[in-house]
Structures are given as C-alpha cells and as structure tokens.
Length: 299
Ligand SMILES: Cc1cc2nc3c(=O)[nH]c(=O)nc-3n(C[C@H](O)[C@H](O)[C@H](O)COP(=O)(O)OP(=O)(O)OC[C@H]3O[C@@H](n4cnc5c(N)ncnc54)[C@H](O)[C@@H]3O)c2cc1C
Image 1 (cartoon, rainbow, N blue to C red):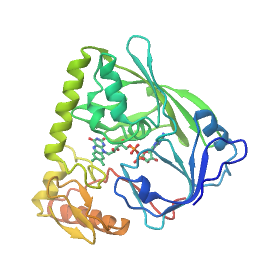
Image 2 (image 1 turned 30 degrees about the vertical axis):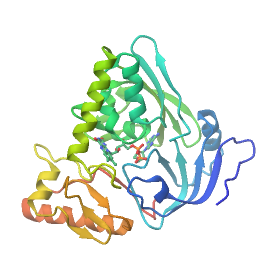
Image 3 (image 1 turned 180 degrees about the vertical axis):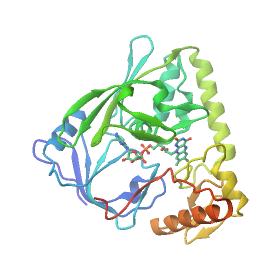
Image 4 (image 1 turned 90 degrees about the horizontal axis):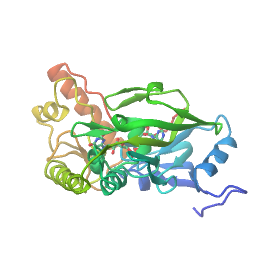
C-alpha cells in the first residue's frame, strides 16, 4: 500500500500492512492501519486525534509477538526506527527512547565506559519491548537499570513515572493501565568499556552455541516455571523436532519454536498448545507462555 502522509502529522500511515514483515516469527496478517511516527511529539499528536474506540497495538521489533493470521483490526504504532534518540546523561546515565534496540543501548553503554547493561546485547528487541516485558538474560533484567520512564496514554497525555509505579516481575510488568513507554532513563555503573565489549561478545557467542539464532523464532516461548527450565520439561517429553505444519520445536533449544519457512500463526499456536498440554499431562506443570498473542478479535 502506498504510504500516506496525514495532514499536519509528519509520520507515515500505512493501510493493510502485513505484520509478518514486522515480527521475528515472520507470521501475522495485516494491520488495518500502521503508523510510523516522525518523532515523540508527532506520536503524541497522532494519539490525541485517535478515535477513543480504536484498538491499539504498540510494536517494537516484534520479537515477542504471535500475531494471528487474520491480522490486527486496529492501529499499530511502530517505535522501531521512529523513537530513536539515545544520549548520555551525566556521569552514569543513559537516556533512550523506546524504539532504540537493546543491542544499541548495550554497545552505547560500553562505549561510554558504563557497565551492567551487557546482557541487553543479545535481546533482539527495542527498549520499549524490554520495558514492557522486563526482558532479561544472564542474570540481568531491564528494570534493574531504570530510574525513570515517560509514558503516554491514548489521548496523548505524557507522564513521568518512577519504578515504584510498576509491579515488576519475571518477564512481567504491570503498570498504570492504558499507558505505553515513550522513553527511559537508565543508570549504570562506571567501569571498563573494553571489558564491557568483551563481555558482550562472550554472551553473544554463548547464545549462538545454545540457541537457533538466525532462524525465525520468538526466543523462549514459555517462562521458566519456578525452580525448573521449560526447555528441560519439553525435551523430557521427546518434543524436540516435533512439527505442526511449518512450525517446529527447535532441535537446538526445546523452548524455541521456529518457523521452518511456511508456518502460519495457526501452526505455531497449535504447537504451543500441544507442548503445553503434553508437559502438563506428564508433569502437572502448566507452562505459561512468555510470548504475547495478538488475536484477530483483539478488543
Ligand atoms: C532469538 C531471540 C532471543 C530472545 N532472547 C531473549 C532473552 O534472552 N531475554 C528476554 O527477555 N527476551 C528474549 N527474547 C524475546 C524478545 O526479544 C523480548 O521480549 C523483547 O523485549 C521484545 O521486544 P520487542 O521490541 O521486539 O517487543 P515486541 O515483540 O514488539 O512487543 C512485545 C510486547 O511489548 C509491547 N510493547 C512494545 N513496545 C512498547 C512500548 N513502547 N510501550 C509499551 N509496550 C510496548 C508490545 O505491545 C507487546 O505486548 C528473544 C527473542 C528472540 C527472537
């Protein structure tokens, strides 16, 4: 569809944009409308004009989203490539807008001799997605570094919020309803940037050894249950390599489901349900999906 420029808005509005182009599983039908704001001010203006009934979905890099094959019957707001300001703040701080990739923040920090953010390097999402999910790896978690965020609601009202305004758990964040992340201020420890870069390379190498990097996936499909690993439980059921249509439980990491080429969202959903069912039948443990499913009948 040809991009439209909305009067006095500076962003780009697409119609019927296939979401498979914007999700790491490479599945998902079209969004009725898809907005790429020019910057934060433009986004605020867009939201202020939005129909209060319009279903809204915020999208970073789509690395934790399972969008149904029928698509999304509302407006998708894309932050990646749009909200991209990244700056040093004082001695230990970093200001990042929500569309900046986690990898970029990790490297930026190391280049400025700030350490503690190396774990972000291998998370293939945006900072907005990382804030929404409390993304983490190798013992680090996004909210461990956050001192302040700004949110925006669907009327375009911007608010400054503190970590105390959110209940932050394992891959789970509950905040004031109807607010999304515009930007964040992080505080890291002063340290040796060269050692930080070396740590980043080491963590990326470890990922490449254990995860099917490069194949379309959403990372870990299920949260780890308390005291155990979802991958261990799935592997113990002999489900590695199990396929439904084009979706397959990875041979390399049992908590990853990969799109072997032609998977539909329905194939992936069925495989998630099957894994959940088989593990629960055998062990009594009901695995909880970490990925966010966006249903075609999304309210
Ligand atoms: C190969 C691979 C490895 C991965 N490894 C890890 C890992 O080690 N640790 C980990 O935690 N995750 C991992 N993930 C999952 C994923 O990268 C993270 O959950 C990431 O934080 C999602 O960011 P995103 O920008 O892609 O968000 P999206 O997938 O676009 O969105 C995820 C959720 O966040 C919401 N959201 C997005 N932007 C905003 C915003 N600005 N304000 C409010 N809500 C927003 C969306 O609406 C959605 O509900 C991995 C994924 C892949 C594909």
